[in-house]
Image 1 (spheres, one colour):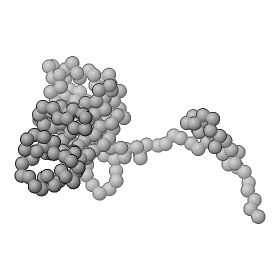
Image 2 (cartoon, rainbow, N blue to C red; image 1 turned 90 degrees about the vertical axis):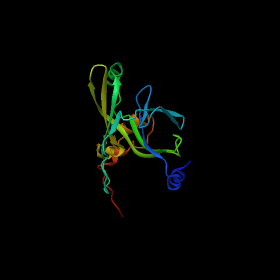
Image 3 (cartoon, rainbow, N blue to C red; image 1 turned 120 degrees about the horizontal axis):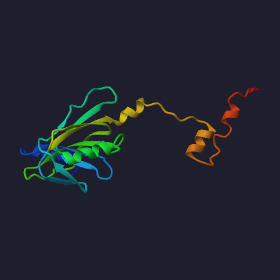
Image 4 (cartoon, rainbow, N blue to C red; image 1 turned 135 degrees about the vertical axis):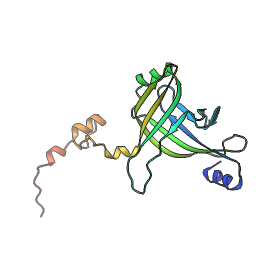
Amino acid sequence: MTAEETFSYLEDNDVFSPIILAEFDFDPTPVRVFSGLGDLTWAGKTFTGLGNLGEISNPQDGNDLRANTQAYRLNGIPSEYLGIVLTENYQGRRSRLWLGVLDEYGQLAGDPYLISDGRMDTATIEDNGDTGSITIQAETILIDLDRPRERRYTHEDQQDLYPGDMFLEKVTASQNKEIIWK
């Protein structure tokens, strides 16, 4: 079912349950969770239900084009799994959030709608003995627009990217060259 078919389902049916699906690209196994119970399979991926054990901060909304951050909190995590986050190289890895709908039988009605696509930045861990919580901060992909670019249009920089390419070989020699137009 497409997004249009999902909206049509919502118009035609009185019984449905909205859900949130989240995916965090940890290596080697991505973490996939959703706001329901049990397991949910979509697009060949299995999402584990957290029920009310997860929280998502309100995304910053507005008409202007800017980079925003999103906070995801997973509660009730067994303590033995908390250490994995400490040793994992997760910064810059992808995090995505979808809005979906379950029909009256608990089945996914159509394809969920992607509402956030970003990169994980920081993680905060709280250990309460047997269980704990993890709060993951993620930035939207627009944050890349604020980062300075360190590449230059020089022959040496071109060789780093494409060894043997001679396209920018004459750039340095042409910088201070006087050109007389007739």
